[in-house]
Image 1 (cartoon, one colour):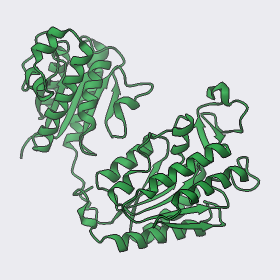
Image 2: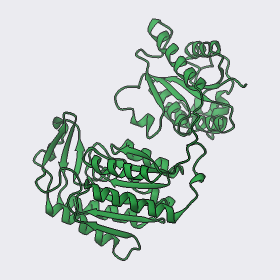
Image 3: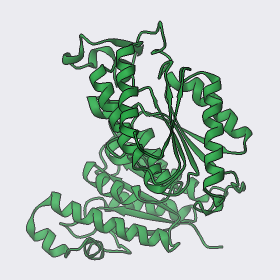
Image 4: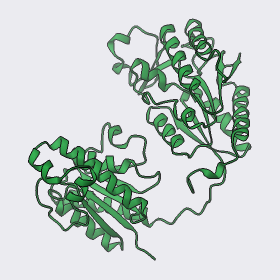
Length: 417
């Protein structure tokens, strides 16, 4: 049986002792390694399997030119591109079963760039000085794992040795784990959810499971939306129950849960059957009440919890959001149904709720209707609010019909995913 093989990616001109220690720990666990050097300036401190020249050429440059130019930022960009190609080829060819890197912010950036493109579930870890605070720029929508190094990765000491040993043990455990024995056979549905749409998505999930689906629920906090869009594009998803499009509001107004401009595009571009609703477009998200920008302090604010403050969208913002939703779904090449819950788009926008605003809701729904006028898409208007269980079941049933009619090729998803 072939031994597991872990890629060790790093700047080996400055962190040779650390990588040597990790390599020895992995060897003691019966794990082979392939060392990849993306350092530019000094000579590598340990023997390497794939040297910096190879990495640089994979990134479209010569390492000597990068060193003589003296531009560290430009050099790291090239090496990140090259490392991405080298790592991808090793993984796709089956020569690697895991990946580990050690670094500060620069090394973490290069390694994260290389590791982010690897398949979902592929074991990958970075022991990093940057593994605290906002790590979104490194992890993105992937399952990359960052482990805090506590001290800088600059020599061997009683703290760094413990952290390095833990990182080696973690990747060793991941690559030596027994394979999953289940063979997924059910079609996959992706569903978008927020606290204020939880009853709807929960009931819809239950109904879809009764109909034979496996349902993946994504929390619409920016990273959740990006992860969902990525899996749709990668071909994992057979249908999308996008009842919660709230991230569009954060992207428009400047909230903390934006998923970026590509949100609500993957299903349409790939032809994946989708149900879309303006769920939770009545709100923009901020952190604790003290983090709300001064310019918004006189708006309708609602403290959801100590860490999240919601702001009601205005009629003007609602109109823009409705137009944006309509523009994106109108471009869909696959089956698409838009559901308008006229009784309220969230748990707190129903009559009597703190975000109930007829003018804003009317602006939202009118913009969606106008944007979809003349399109071939199906629009369903319901007097119910989004969390009414009858509407949830109807949404699930409609999606089931759309998937069934659209394609029976569920087995074309990536194998075993």
